[in-house]
Image (tube, rainbow, N blue to C red):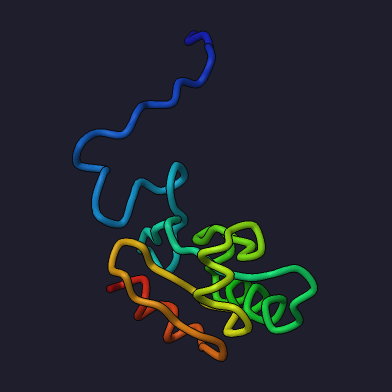
Length: 112
């Protein structure tokens, strides 16, 4: 009879690390694709449109594929985006999406 011991997690191999990041560590899986977690959603407090953008991202399966960035904590971002938020930014490609955007446009942004 085999004894059951602790479950060991195997570190990702070089093959697992792609431009799209390793699932579960730096990204999330959507439609059998690994989505990078490096997307940034520029927002500010009490922003109704930002709430709508977050809801769209969650409904589209991108809930863990982005980082929320409050532009009011960074003077440069505040000057750059001001009232043009929410903006979804892919730092890997430099591409941006200004609101309103669709889940299809987010997928295109992710695919670069």
